[in-house]
Amino acid sequence: MRIIGIPKEIKEAEKRVALIPEDCQKLIEKGFTIYLQSTAGEGAGFADADYESIGCKIAQDAESLYQSATLIVKVKEPLEGDLKYLTKDHLLFCYLHLASGPELTKVLLEKEIKAVAFETVVVNGKTPLLAPMSAIAGRLATQIGTWYLHAPRGGDGTLLGGIHGLPRGEVVVIGAGVAGTEAARLAYRMGAHVTILDINETRLKELKAEMPQLTTDVSNDETIIKYCEIADILVGSVYVVGRKAPIIVKEKHIQNMQAGSVVVDISIDQGGCVETSKPCTHLEPVYNLHGVTHSAITNLPAAAPKTASEILSMNIRDYVAKLSLDEWDDVLLNAVNTCDGKLQIEL
Image (cartoon, rainbow, N blue to C red; front, side):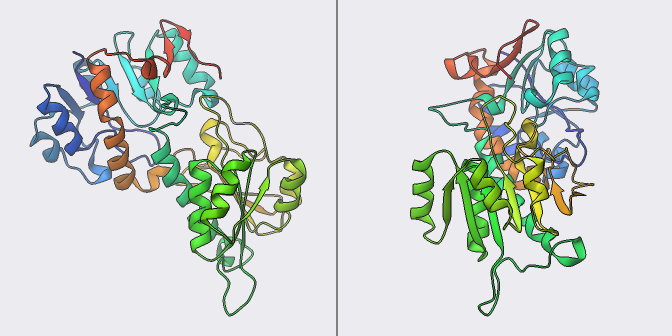
């Protein structure tokens, strides 16, 4: 049985924690041993005492945490402060997004670390460990877009839901997966006119049945040009499991958008689906290019660390138990990204 270790996240503005006390308790009651790096849960609202009270052991720093545990369960990909402690004896379980991280990939291979990525756990064609964060990211994308439409933030001053019969804001979502759907749902509830583009016509029909006033269309260069020209908010949400996101929105499309409009690229974790996107942070969330405000925050759900930690913890708990026991079913075997110095997935 592997000892479980939960390090403190060190990515900028990252306050999530992989396992909350409630789920740690359920694992401990089954005989698992868990170490938590001191203060790792504070950003999500959980004190060391909350973990200690249910039987977790507290490691005072990262070095002692990595020395005490061999199954490392964290939220975001390891940074230098983590990588220096990781060895081939560790099993790593977290979001990796290697398609947009060639340097991280190189280090994991050089160190011969076995790493399982949350986002490549696939069950019946779905990604149960990615979906909860995608849902949060989708809702946050609409909130960010709405905020930066405000004139003092450089936006065109459109009120998303309109008022007294005046025109509503136009929200265009590219990609009808979990994140795109949640972005569209929130914008729809806020009263915006929402258009969603995707290549899956069956999915578009389902969303149209759910939201009768929704506009749907098949995603291609012609429709992207058409809808980018009218968008106040454009949300890019395209995901191919484990692979680099395809560039769907080209720079020429951005150049044709209205001045003061906003682009939010949720796909940035996988490299981004908008050609003009570049990684942003919560401390520097936007930049302007071609008169269009861009936001592409690589850890967007970290803006809601309490909610995000609670739902992530609940979803990963059973997988953590299997990995601690080295119980490898097909789902987990197929989610291995690196092992013995070899890349196990196509990026």
